[in-house]
Image 1: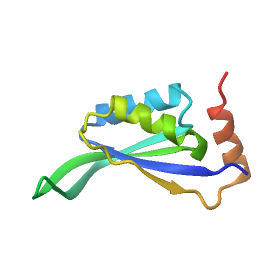
Image 2: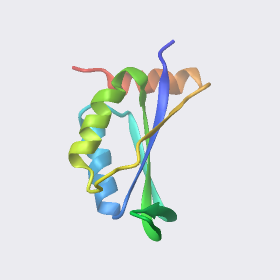
Image 3: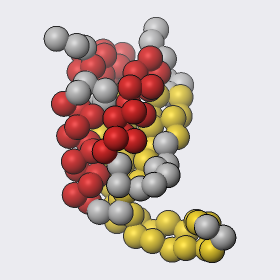
Length: 107
């Protein structure tokens, strides 16, 4: 069985999330990206506690595609230091994981 992951990132604007999602799916680095928001993030940046409205991107992919996915996110992401966290998928339905693999196949 392949090692499936869900990668998380956030962006400031919904349009940035949608553009990133389309880029990743078109390049077959992600089978699906959900852009959720707005959300409120509280974080420390350059010595100060900040509060910002953001959009959460949940990226479905496989571990073997992570390096290329990270490079594409860094290329397109508007943040100086984008959040990039990859979480393992422990289980998933057989049908969904087959669809995920099919959506990631290079043609």
